[in-house]
Image (cartoon, rainbow, N blue to C red; front, side):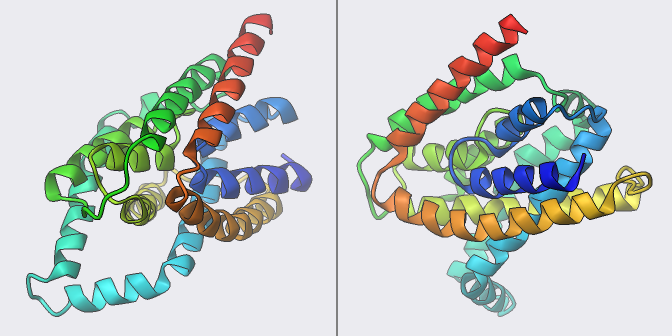
Length: 264
């Protein structure tokens, strides 16, 4: 993969990680369009690097929130920040279990399976459509809600299902405040990404040998900058109940992907 392709895919990742259109699905479609011939393991490495970049952009956008949460948690009292951290941990359980027991099976799905991506994009479109119709409330994410949202995040590990779309939609459909739902959605994935990267590096699963480090770096920077923009934009869009536009987009791209998969 050359530098130009890496930058394009980095921008795609940065935008689609936060916008509810499936970053993994668009990466697979982008790789197919650009003719990426990477084996699944190499393709997964590039995907992980880009996800790491968007995780960093999340930390930058929510830096004040994160500092407050950590400060409150370290007070070792049962306050709102401690409750929030506990909810984040609860939300991580389903995805952590799926990643631990089905890691090899998931890796094989990141190899240009355009039909799967198309079908899952349509699932994302349906979720977004119903979530956009939900009334806004002032309700906070509860502990039981956190686990259910975590299940949505685990399902969103499939390429084509938007993680942000699935988690925000699930949270909103459970009756939670839309802004709080977006904040929880963006923060809940950060520990998982860093944990996954640490596990792969320590376990030797991610090897940078024979990889184009320059291309990886270019993709990383592009994803980070695009992520800063998309995260801020998405929070505004959720507040204004504009998810139906993304539902239409996902449905159109999903249908196109399915048709192309049968024609190719």
